[in-house]
Image 1 (tube, rainbow, N blue to C red):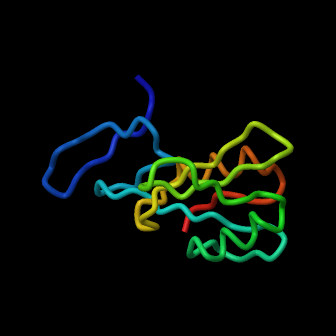
Image 2 (image 1 turned 120 degrees about the vertical axis):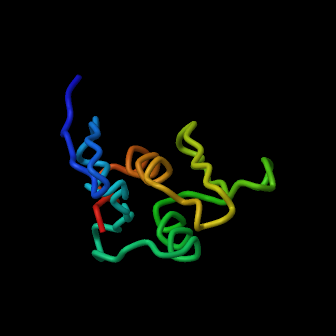
Length: 109
């Protein structure tokens, strides 16, 4: 077992196995997707779509109506995001980073 032991306010001790992803007190750190060229935090799908389209990504409409998707003709990659931006979390952010190296970065807010 590795991690960080944290004393909670109610006197309970708990192990945080991923101390980079959680903060003492039970909250998680909020992550943001940053466009490196501009330093701008991606705060909406409108902004993300503009950036991705500039990189050669196109909207993909053949899938699930609950997803917002992009594909590139030059690769087999597909970016699938929840239609609701409030559900856009670090898993989706890292998927974008991996498929667009040196363009985006995920940071703690």
